[in-house]
Image 1 (spheres, rainbow, N blue to C red):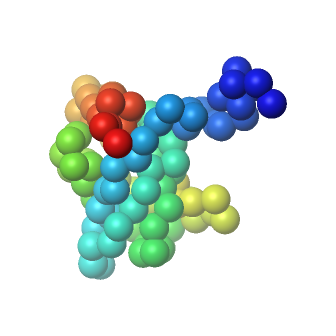
Image 2: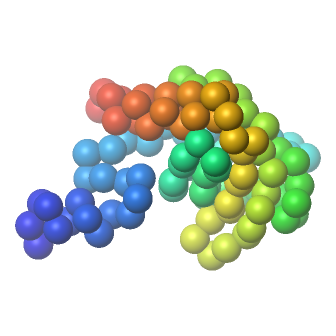
Length: 105
């Protein structure tokens, strides 16, 4: 498989060059979380903590800070979070993407 076709199959946020920093999902208790996808409108994460659909939670990224979110869906591939759309959510998403892409191994 060529490098280009490999990059296309990784999904909307992932790339073969992207590194991940561990996030913290806080609901009833804090738990580690990994970003799968992120945008200014929300994120998909993987975590051992599985809050109920509709629960209010917060997501903390080590560089982007913390953002309030609501659990919109629980799926096999992750937990979908919705952010209140605005400058704060766009800045959070861009910060997380940039930080993960520039993480030194």
